[in-house]
Amino acid sequence: MYKNTFVILGLLFLIIAMISCSGKVELENIDQEKWKNDRDGCLGSRLENLEDLREIKNDFLGKDNQALIKTFGRPDKVELADRSQTFFIYFLEPGPECQNVEKKEDPLKAIFRLNAYSRVSEVTISTLEPGNLR
Image 1 (tube, rainbow, N blue to C red):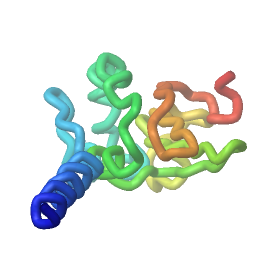
Image 2: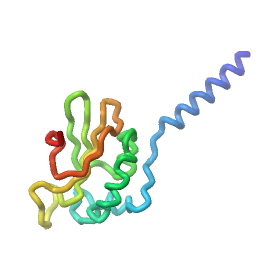
Image 3: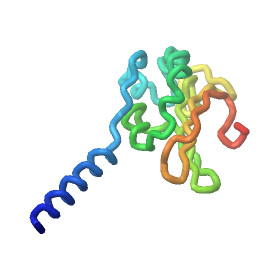
Image 4: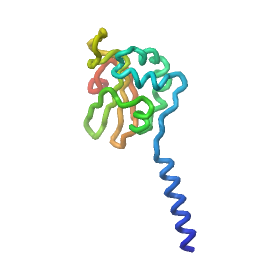
């Protein structure tokens, strides 16, 4: 009797562990390695994927921060907001850290709003800063 209980509990923990692990999101039309290598959007290759990103942006709703990092790499910028929210920002046009390229004052960026549970609650593509989106 006890042996069966341990087996059931072991399987339950294994299933929970497998579900809780987050993997990268597979994207059909976006070259993820090229995206990751275009840090701060300095090379301009992220902008090539703008329309594809607009089409799939809502697929990221509910994904956790680790899935974003595995998919797109470390964010170019992270901003903390009230109520334990975080914004992951990926520059699509050359950002402020780029050298030797023409930069816009307000570059286009993909902004992922993460809630207190580190889950994506909103995805915006805009030139506005996260605090000015609403």
